[in-house]
Amino acid sequence: MATSKIEWTESTWNPITGCTKISPGCKNCYAERMALRLKAMRQANYTNGFELTLHEHMLERPLQWKKPQVIFVNSMSDLFHKDVPLDYIQRVFDVMRRAWWHDFQILTKRSQRLLEVSDAIDWPSNVWMGVSVETDKYIFRIEHLKATNANIKFLSLEPLLGPLPNLSLTGIDWVIAGGESGPNARPVKEKWIAAIRDQCLTAQVPFFFKQWGGKNKKKNGRLLQGVTWDQLPVTNNYQPVYA
Image (tube, rainbow, N blue to C red):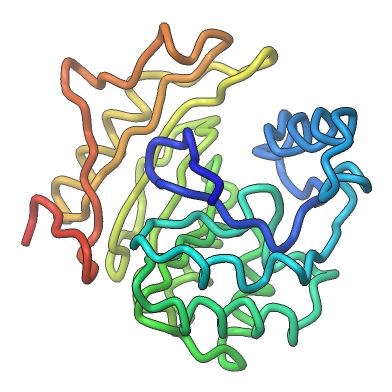
């Protein structure tokens, strides 16, 4: 299994790699940097670099992992990219359904397509579906997510590039927030993060602060006003602070 350094998950599974940029949050894409590095290292799954590539040989990999894991699906791509066929999306969901002992986390910026195909998906209870929102221009993605049949719905407000003062959190099970990391990281303001935390506290939605980011992510840490926020949603495996 691919153990992950991402703070809010345990492992990654990539039956698809590669993507294309669609909004400002994509500008300094970590997955693109990593894919090109792996191509240079001649890693077989990255022969195409960051071009969208389906990896059928990876489809059933989670079924081989017997220890229950929280698994981030397609950390190196977007399952709802326009060039991923619907039948392939359905096959990914079929594997997640059969691997019932794991929890699977999916993130997309392509909320319109997510909504369009939602009724064609048999949504397992062990799938957490999320959308990324980097500025208030993209809060429409939240409404698309809410209209799907996903059992657990979450938001990834990362890389946060502006304030989000009026989040609609009804029907949302979890919120992640964080700044951008890497060599060209754009700054995040404490008041943006604190306002999101406060909205989550008011709505009793579990809140997870991932990082301040910046060029030195480790040095900058993840404390928000002296507190580490590691809350998780209600699932078969986890209980949040607000039970």
